[in-house]
Image 1: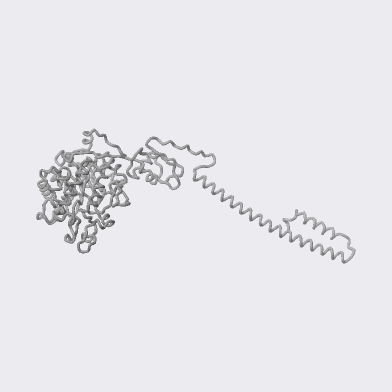
Image 2: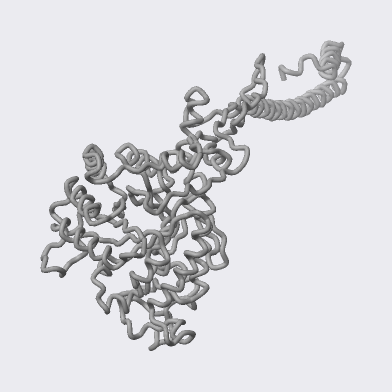
Length: 524
């Protein structure tokens, strides 16, 4: 009861008890009364003390709760202050005014340089988020990858309007020295390095996929037959501008009638099986559209027009043919009902006539990839593919036969044709020149830049092919490597360039632009 000493009620009880204890005793009854009163007072005192203890405990508990709540609020306030990078005595930086061609972005928690670059990429002149990220670091004092909240970043390369790039018209006799890039590689950081490396080596052109034989479309393109898709070349106009800034002739490749994606989505457009009435398969694979279907032709032609409108200088048709393998007798095509007198070659020639008439007025070249074996004009090859070289030459500017030495197995008495590049390049080129004589078409071959079925692949292997093609009237060349590995051409090109005219003339796109009074478009 020590915590109750100051209680007024207790003080009065103790005083009364003291008085009665020390007063004269007159009899037993008075003593008993005093004792009884004393016990009653003591009991009241104990009960009152218990109540006070309970009250004190309640107050203590409420104090603890209030203290905890106050501490939590304080901690929360501290965190909010930290997130905003403010505190006692701190001053918020004034908003930065963006300079022309830039934007200012205030970072948020969780931002990184690459995430900011991805967000702003469509608004800039940069092709890849990697390039833009490096530019952001350079414009902001080499900021770290992980950004603090509240930082103000300068974003360089902001465009006032979308890039509009036009094709650079060149004569069909322009000497192209090109490499091939897949659509996935083309507009990547690595792909751009390949382009710059090729330029340094002496190249002046790039062939890049806007649609490959799996049917994947690599550029933004809207069409009822296509639907949603992921474009690896996000802005074709930006890409063609980049190629032009590097002195590169831009060749957009379209794999035409072999289109796996289209036939899976629209089986009614596939070659049909006579036996089953279902889509026909080439060696078990559902990959071929019916080249005589007008919907298929118009789809590919619309894609070609989109590429031309975005600055491609040349449209290249690959797989512009009928399927050459599989059960040919079981394959049914639409033209057999509509034009029963036609052959496959009639379908191809008729389509090319329309395509050439559509694309040529746009100032772009049209080139066609054809089998190298077609130089031998075997009836079976013509019947299957429909590639009548004489007729095709009338409706294009350039023919590009695929005359890879390693692919001529079983021909001309060579057990290993891949090790005889000089013979097969020269023989193929000579035959194509004879077939197309008088047509005015340019023969620009695809050459082998890979080691398949040859033990002699080397920089010298490259040089032999280029020289053999030129000696037989070829104008320029295209190097094919499915993996985009051009280490051997990189080595061979400077040596061929130093020979001054022995391997190639050395035409440059810059000379074409100067003659047309055009100035280069710059891109980062």
